[in-house]
Amino acid sequence: MNELQSLYKKDYPVFIEPYLHSKSMQRLKGVDMNCGLQFTSHSGFSSYGSYSRYDHSVGVACIIWHFTHDKKQTLAGLFHDISTRVFSHVIDFVKNDYLVQESTEDETRQILLQDVGIMNQLLCDGISVDEVSDYHAYPIADNDSPRLSSDRLEYTLGNLLNYRKRKIKEIEKYYNDLVVGVLEDGSEEIMFQNPEIAEEFAFGALSCGMIYSCDFDRYGMEKLAEILRKALKDNILEESDLYLSEIEVVNKILHSDLRNTWDEYTRLYDVVKDTSGDIMVNAKKRYIDPY
Image (cartoon, rainbow, N blue to C red; front, side, top):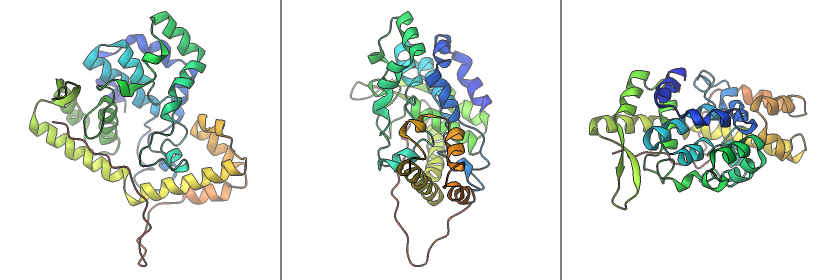
């Protein structure tokens, strides 16, 4: 992922540096984008490189800065995952929010307010917390699917590279073809200039979407959600523990009666079709119309 970070940092918002050292941002280094599936024995998920919510958030901030040079929008993008708990969207399964995946997003403002380092720096920069606590307010940062936003762009580029679907030269080609355009409704959107490049990117995004919604992904996330529900019910974990790092939570589980259940989870490597029929686990559909 270092190659991707180098691409983003060709136009780097230096002013975000103090925020990166905050406790809330540093915590995201221990939360992986693969939602705990990297702990399984699946041939894909167990072999992908580290891709943390911290890496993703910095990437989103760099993309927004590249296209807007607006500090408030950039910080809103930087903070957009600051309330993400361990194992990311597995918590949406725990909270039965896996189709929308917004169960933690309303906590962003509260976390910012409680982080002294962030609040002091916002004061120095003359920016209010309300201007950076909701990235949905900025179309370049986030918009409705299937439009292309900085958030959607970053995790697609990151996963194309991490899933070994594309090489860095192809990622650079996509990134360098992007501009900001104005839609019929007057809102701005990141879009491609070249239709052939846009098509190539769109099919790449679909290939990632097939991984996000594959049987193993759905099954693995639901199994991990079951472990977390049990851990919370039996007071092995407290709600506040979900804001630790993933390794810290795993260690708590390993020192509990759920150790064998966790070990079983880590041995998962595939799913097999049952001849008696499938169990339906709905998935959030992720796709992009980039042109």
